[in-house]
Structure formats: structure tokens, C-alpha cells
Amino acid sequence: MVSKGNLFIISGPSGTGKGSICNELIKYEDTFLSVSLTTRDKRNDEIDGVTYYYVSNEEFKKRIENNLMLEWAQYGDNFYGTPKDKVEEKLNSGINVILEIEVQGALKVKQKIPEAVMIFMLPPSAQALKERLLNRDREKEEEILKRIDIAKKELSKAYLYDYIIINDDFDECLKTIRNIIADRQEKLSFAEKLQESI
Image (cartoon, rainbow, N blue to C red; front, side):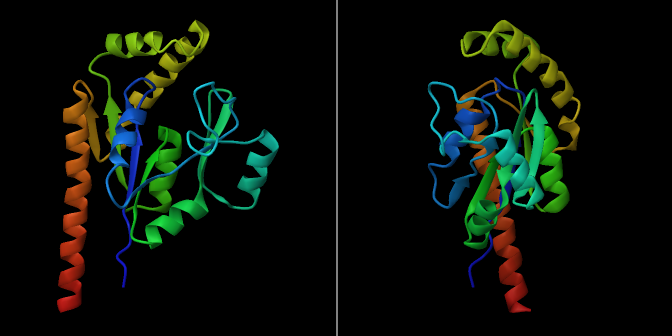
């Protein structure tokens, strides 16, 4: 019998390095990064089906009605969500799944899947967060100010997460999250062996 995979949720304000951390984590075996659906416009450097699945408002709402979303939320002026079928398929195949999602969606997933491990990433300071957002050159100043406002709201929910990690050193942050994943695997593997031997 194949052991079920574990679900890890990584959240945090824009500019904390979530995307870069997740791209490193999936280089290891048995780890899948769930690709979210969004109604926002595709940026020039993004790839449909890799960065996000880009869909219309109409299609997104249809998926909600048909219960095909594990979670969904409105973030700014756009909708984001996690397709349920892909996540369930990977978990049932014994593969760990990482959801890089915002706080609103993360809390919905935790309600449905209480065993999910929630990790909240923080910048080293508010100033560092602002600088990272300004240096990305991807958004207009108005959009950046909106993201800073959203970040304040997200930070107020950080205490609900299992782990809070400050990303002031990329390699150390990656190592910490890899250790969390390995520790979870080890404990579950031990529990399964114990269960079989009783």
C-alpha cells in the first residue's frame, strides 16, 4: 500500500521569496507544486500551465459551482484558486504537494484538510519588503501600494500557521523548510510502521 503524500501550505506577503523557495523545493523527489488558477492577466515572463492556469471570470465561477476547487479567494481585483483533482491525485499517489497560496485560501484548505502543514514566510523587515516589491519592476506604484496594504492584513493572520519563517537568508530559509518537510515524513513513516506492527 502506497503511503499518502503530505500537504504543505506556504504563504506570506508578495516579495517574501515564496516562489523562489517553492521552485527549489520541487527539485527534490516526490514533491509537486500545485499550479493555481487565476483570472488575472498573464505577465510577459509567465507561462500558462506553469506559473498559473489563466482562465476567465466565467470559467472560474463555473468551476466553483461544480465543486472543482479545493479553495478559492479574491485577492485584489482577481480570483485565485486551487484545482482539487490534481492535488488529490498526487496525494493519493504518495507525492507531497506544496500549495503556494494566500492566507484566505490557506485557511480554507486547513479546514478541509486539518493535517496540512502551514508555513508562513516573513521578510526581514517592512522596509525590506517595500524595497523587494519596488525592485521587481513588474507592477505600477499603485499596484505595489495595494500589495503592501494586503501584506498588512496577511501579517495579522501569521499566528494561525504552524511555522513562521523569516527569509533573511535564502539558503537558510530553504534548509529550514526542507527540514520541516523531512521531519513530517519521518514522523508519519514511524506512525505507519507502528500501526502495522500492532
